[in-house]
Image (cartoon, rainbow, N blue to C red; front, side, top):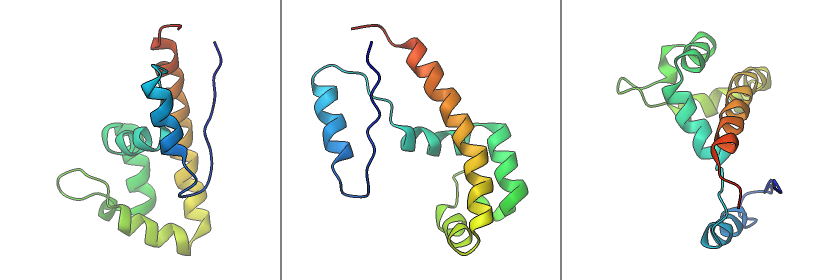
Length: 105
Protein backbone atom coordinates (compact mmCIF):
# COMPACT_ATOMS: atom_id res chain seq x y z
CA UNK A 1 0.00 0.00 0.00
CA UNK A 2 1.21 3.49 -0.82
CA UNK A 3 0.50 6.25 1.68
CA UNK A 4 0.54 9.75 0.30
CA UNK A 5 0.32 13.06 2.11
CA UNK A 6 -1.10 16.06 0.29
CA UNK A 7 0.31 19.36 1.51
CA UNK A 8 0.38 22.92 0.28
CA UNK A 9 -0.68 26.44 0.99
CA UNK A 10 -4.17 27.88 0.96
CA UNK A 11 -5.70 27.64 -2.50
CA UNK A 12 -3.04 25.28 -3.84
CA UNK A 13 -5.52 22.56 -4.85
CA UNK A 14 -5.23 20.05 -2.00
CA UNK A 15 -8.99 19.55 -1.81
CA UNK A 16 -9.24 19.14 -5.57
CA UNK A 17 -6.55 16.46 -5.59
CA UNK A 18 -8.21 14.66 -2.68
CA UNK A 19 -11.58 14.79 -4.44
CA UNK A 20 -10.04 13.16 -7.51
CA UNK A 21 -8.53 10.43 -5.35
CA UNK A 22 -11.92 9.83 -3.73
CA UNK A 23 -13.60 9.61 -7.16
CA UNK A 24 -11.05 6.91 -7.98
CA UNK A 25 -12.01 4.99 -4.83
CA UNK A 26 -8.93 5.93 -2.81
CA UNK A 27 -9.66 6.49 0.90
CA UNK A 28 -8.72 10.00 2.02
CA UNK A 29 -8.04 11.09 5.60
CA UNK A 30 -8.80 14.78 6.06
CA UNK A 31 -6.54 15.78 8.94
CA UNK A 32 -7.92 19.34 9.22
CA UNK A 33 -11.49 18.10 9.52
CA UNK A 34 -10.53 15.45 12.04
CA UNK A 35 -8.55 17.98 14.10
CA UNK A 36 -11.67 20.13 14.42
CA UNK A 37 -13.70 17.10 15.51
CA UNK A 38 -11.04 15.95 17.95
CA UNK A 39 -10.83 19.40 19.57
CA UNK A 40 -14.56 19.18 20.26
CA UNK A 41 -15.07 15.48 21.01
CA UNK A 42 -11.87 14.33 22.74
CA UNK A 43 -12.26 15.12 26.44
CA UNK A 44 -8.52 15.14 27.19
CA UNK A 45 -7.77 17.45 24.26
CA UNK A 46 -10.65 19.74 25.19
CA UNK A 47 -9.50 19.96 28.81
CA UNK A 48 -5.94 20.76 27.76
CA UNK A 49 -7.18 23.51 25.43
CA UNK A 50 -9.31 25.00 28.22
CA UNK A 51 -6.31 24.85 30.56
CA UNK A 52 -4.33 27.00 28.12
CA UNK A 53 -6.98 29.33 26.70
CA UNK A 54 -9.66 29.35 29.38
CA UNK A 55 -13.34 28.45 29.17
CA UNK A 56 -13.83 31.07 26.46
CA UNK A 57 -12.15 28.61 24.08
CA UNK A 58 -15.52 26.86 23.76
CA UNK A 59 -19.03 28.11 23.28
CA UNK A 60 -21.76 26.92 25.65
CA UNK A 61 -22.92 24.43 22.99
CA UNK A 62 -19.48 22.75 23.11
CA UNK A 63 -18.20 24.03 19.78
CA UNK A 64 -14.71 25.46 19.71
CA UNK A 65 -14.38 29.24 19.57
CA UNK A 66 -11.98 29.35 16.64
CA UNK A 67 -11.97 33.14 16.35
CA UNK A 68 -11.02 33.57 20.01
CA UNK A 69 -8.23 31.00 19.80
CA UNK A 70 -6.96 32.40 16.48
CA UNK A 71 -6.65 35.87 17.96
CA UNK A 72 -4.51 34.48 20.76
CA UNK A 73 -2.26 32.18 18.77
CA UNK A 74 -1.45 34.84 16.16
CA UNK A 75 -0.41 37.24 18.92
CA UNK A 76 1.30 34.68 21.15
CA UNK A 77 3.33 32.14 19.15
CA UNK A 78 4.14 30.18 22.30
CA UNK A 79 0.42 29.44 22.73
CA UNK A 80 0.27 28.23 19.12
CA UNK A 81 3.09 25.81 19.91
CA UNK A 82 1.20 24.58 22.97
CA UNK A 83 -1.98 24.09 20.93
CA UNK A 84 -0.08 22.20 18.24
CA UNK A 85 1.56 20.02 20.90
CA UNK A 86 -1.92 19.01 22.08
CA UNK A 87 -3.74 18.61 18.78
CA UNK A 88 -1.07 17.16 16.48
CA UNK A 89 -0.37 13.99 18.50
CA UNK A 90 -4.12 13.36 18.85
CA UNK A 91 -4.62 13.74 15.08
CA UNK A 92 -1.62 11.51 14.39
CA UNK A 93 -3.08 8.78 16.59
CA UNK A 94 -6.51 9.21 15.03
CA UNK A 95 -4.92 8.95 11.57
CA UNK A 96 -3.11 5.76 12.55
CA UNK A 97 -6.37 4.22 13.73
CA UNK A 98 -8.14 5.35 10.56
CA UNK A 99 -5.36 3.92 8.42
CA UNK A 100 -5.48 0.57 10.22
CA UNK A 101 -9.23 0.39 9.59
CA UNK A 102 -8.87 0.82 5.81
CA UNK A 103 -9.03 -2.14 3.51
CA UNK A 104 -6.18 -2.62 1.09
CA UNK A 105 -7.07 -1.82 -2.51
